[in-house]
Structures are given as structure tokens and as C-alpha cells.
Image (cartoon, rainbow, N blue to C red; front, side, top):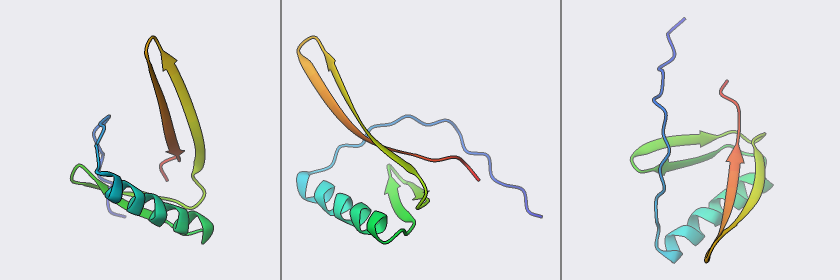
Length: 77
């Protein structure tokens, strides 16, 4: 059995122009509706999100700024 490649910890943010962001959201929504794996490349690394991933929305407020995060979480298999 081949050894699984160990991935380094990673915590990045990638900004996208509105049109690219919308296109990614549409692809994500299509995959969720069809119960398919979602594949995306972020800052040069390919990521595959399984169809059973947990999806949540987080809202943060601090001083004079607010943030909404659409989060998708899953366990490594």
C-alpha cells in the first residue's frame, strides 16, 4: 500500500474578484445539490471537498468591522 503524503499545516486567505468568486460559488452550489465532490485550487494547491462535508456560516463582529465566513469542514480519510 503506498504511503499517504503528509500535508503541511496551512492557513491562508485568497482574495478573488467578484466574478471569479461568484463562479466558484455556483460550482460549489452545483456540487452540493448533486451530492458530488467539489474540487478547487487555492493559492496553487488542489483541494477536494467530499460530498459529506459539514457546511456552516460564521458571523464575527469586532470593534468597527464584521465578517461572514462560509465554512466547509470534513475529516481526512
